[in-house]
Length: 288
Image (cartoon, rainbow, N blue to C red; front, top):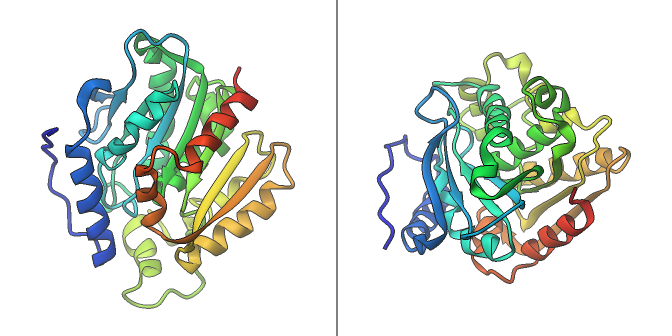
């Protein structure tokens, strides 16, 4: 049993999210620590600027998969993704699970800026764990999918942070929250929460949406969502895919039958799931 000592967070807003968190954190406790190379490494001054590293002994020049957790930008732990570690490492990847500053204490763009800060830190240091800083693959679930997409699409921010944009080889967001804009959010809804809790200013809703950053994209993108996902997630990913198809990099979109918003992450407990096969295929097609 892998012990977890996690800082308290506000309750998640609805039962399905609470059940998801309970499940994936229990799986994290059951992870065999044999592949855990380092825990709670710092990539910045805040207590939430932390990441964990999973890899195999003797790794050299391994591709690096960074996976950001979800939680609506207000909740979540890097440990949400620990259950994926064995399947990732077995495929020859170094696996990085970060956390980031959360709202409302740190409103957007804090989480997006943290993603760039993390990638800059990895570009400097990931070689000590056997990772190849020129082969970075970005992924995440829900809000984490939105963070991964923004990190891949904001080439100017990466360049300014000292990360060659071409080092990001592909992006694989899962049920990503890609569009924060809503013309008339209902009181008490998750959409209203975007404006009251997440954004520094209501007018930033489109600016903080990955769908607004697709022009000129050069990062291959494989996006996935569940057939029973939220209508907002399905609509935004579908519209974003139509924009990505018209950019220089290849783009694919997958719908996973029968899965809801949280199933799309939990299903990766199956190490033979097609998502892992797609990751391997993308690496074969895009590696430096």
